[in-house]
Image (cartoon, rainbow, N blue to C red; front, side, top):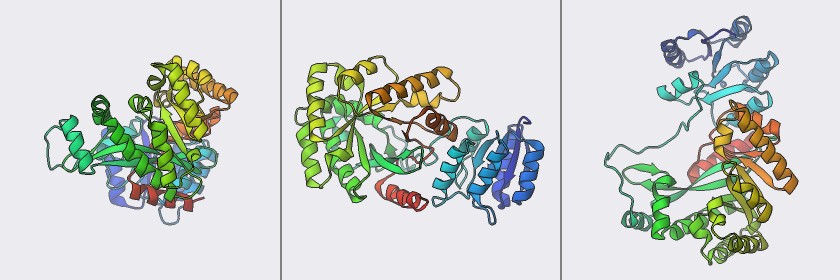
Length: 394
């Protein structure tokens, strides 16, 4: 394989030139093709380090092209470009995993130079749709009890949904609900900004209620099989009324508790293990499933799995993100999967950002996963549209 060479397959000359220009600034030798046969001939002759492919070019069957590359032992880093649409994306992603191709990312139109730069340098993929605000204000956001209370009153908190995927067959098994602050001037704000404050002020109870009510109704509207995962903070977990609140919410929207997965961290259970066991046992008795979140970043997790009635563990994204480069991470994940299997506990990996991570996890025996490779967290309307497009492929 030649170092720093890029072959581009794209029938849009402007798009191809944008990619070529950025690659050339990084020292790449670049060739552009609008014919798939000529592109494949050049690939076989040159074995380039990188490929940029518009999967939806006229006359090009995307999955077949990927299969052909795999048959020729393609080791190139592959960037899928602007032509990729939501209708074809699921089949392409699953094919990339099955054929063990190195897809570095999906570059949507309009191109973002920093994202393209990261992909060409083989850095981890990023959320291509990250929303940092509408530019109406550059003032810093002061987060305190008053601003959180105002945001609750103004219905600024909303739930985003990230799909969870069966890594073997591509089926969607459920969604995780993630709380977001949709600030009218500053745009979408992530939980790290406001959850710690809400826990100190006690407003976490109200925020948890928003996730419960909104998320339960959404997942119920999608049919009778998909699950809904949600994070439970240590403060909410210690609230004696939590189980009653969850049961009442399930009854109100006719959602079986078995379809709800409550994600807890070690912090929520270590302070008073005996009390934690009582609460978790009652939740399990009611039918709720229990997930130990961020598994793999603390030795205490092993003890918790052995002593508490968890039904699932989530492999921490810090392990997933280093799976390709670190043999230690791979060994930790492998031993985690064996432990879970012996305890008859499901496993799901978070933070999957490219095909190599998905391939590695599936090879190790991890059945389920989520991450930007499949979809970013989305608002309700976008999540529904995404699900419809994904399901059409299967």
